[in-house]
Length: 215
Image (cartoon, rainbow, N blue to C red):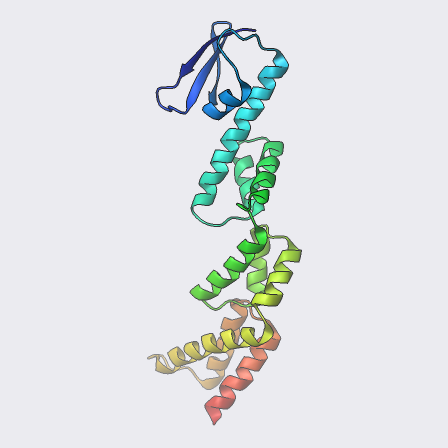
């Protein structure tokens, strides 16, 4: 098999079309062309073509992953899933994830710390819901536990829950639809539970909140 023509693509100046034995074979990025050292007139084996195709798929996968990461931080699992969804070979996806991890473009621990911080900046969330969401995003359980142990301490958990519950209670009290105290209490406890706070935290907040109300 002989390379009969290497032609620059009109729509993408960073890619070329490779022609083998007078027929179009496939397109490749400039970096793949330079790395392979292919020139017009070169004779290629099936093995050489296979390696070029693999290099091209890896280049495309890297570019796709960079584009996917441009919007926000992602987990390794999210990047791998996106590449496979885009029909890249699983081995290619694993290789890209490994490369990006070594380059610190992917860091599940950094992602988890940022997730907890950003989530709590937007609204009050408890450890249960934070853990669930991080696991759903593919963060390893060991990292989730480590980050929560530092970023969601029990005393901080209670403070976050108390602040959110206090705001809710104010809304209850100022609402046109009057709710009896028991309904206010049960509604506040259910609200905290939905936000992912454990029962120990909820109980402490309810005692403190309504004790202050009574006083």
